[in-house]
Image (cartoon, rainbow, N blue to C red; front, side, top):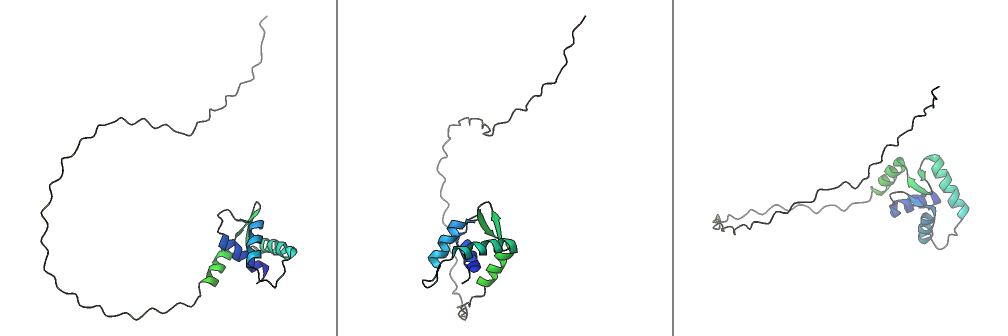
Length: 145
C-alpha cells in the first residue's frame, strides 16, 4: 500500500468532521502497516504535500480532509464488492380467511383532571445585544467676543 492510499484510508476511517491531524493519520498508518515495512517519515510528508498539490486532500489549518473528488473516488472503489445473491423468493402462501372480529366495547374515559394553570415565566433572550458605539462628533470650540 502506498503512502497516499494509506492516508486516504486513514482519513476515511477516522471520520473527523474538521479533518484529521497529521499525528492521527501517522498513528493510524503505523498501526495498519505490515511488519516487514519500515516507516519513512519523509515519504509520508511528501505524500501529504503532493496530495494537497494534486487536489486529493484539502489542508485545513493543521488537519487534512479528502476533497469531494477524492471522496467519490473512494466510494466507487469501496462499492464494487461482490454481493450475495438474494435467495429466490417463495410464493406467498394463500391467506386463510378469518372471521371478522367484533369491536370491543369502548371504555369510558376517566374523568379528566383539571391541572392548575401556572403562568410561564417569559422567556428571555440569551444573546446579548451589543450597544451601538456612539461616536462623538468633533466640535470646535468657539469663543464669543
